[in-house]
Amino acid sequence: MKSTAIRTLTALAGVILVAGAIAGCTDSGDSSPKKSASAKPSATPSQVTDVTDAPGTGEGLVGARNDVEVTKCEPADGGWAVAGTVTNSSDAAANYRIYVSLLDKDGATLGLKQVNSDGLDAGAKADWSADIAVEGKNLQCVLRVERYAA
Image (cartoon, rainbow, N blue to C red; front, side, top):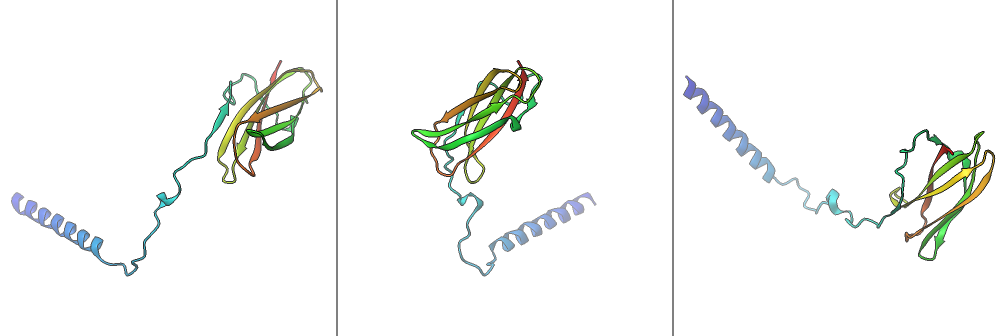
């Protein structure tokens, strides 16, 4: 009885393998070449990262994007120049970490630079700037801003 069951299972497995092989060899009628998902260029743009503190790692951070204004985001010699102002909207002196990212049209980050503005008194305003050695046209400047007690 055992050997009959084994022979039946073996025969069934053989039929499945042959049927799969035949189905894999049949012509779908469309002989045009297909593009694979890997047909995209494999080259990735160069990235520049100049960060001393990983974003979100400071104790007692407060998101403060509204405290920062970008006044310049444009190509410059050797990369991009980004600048702006930071205004301390809190009631006490504060330190700021401004993370400036340059993104391409697909949203890929090509450059990331940290700019610190420390000891800014309550209500005070300061200028900040970042030069990022990234080549490219039509890049978008995106900020992450963190405020800490001074």
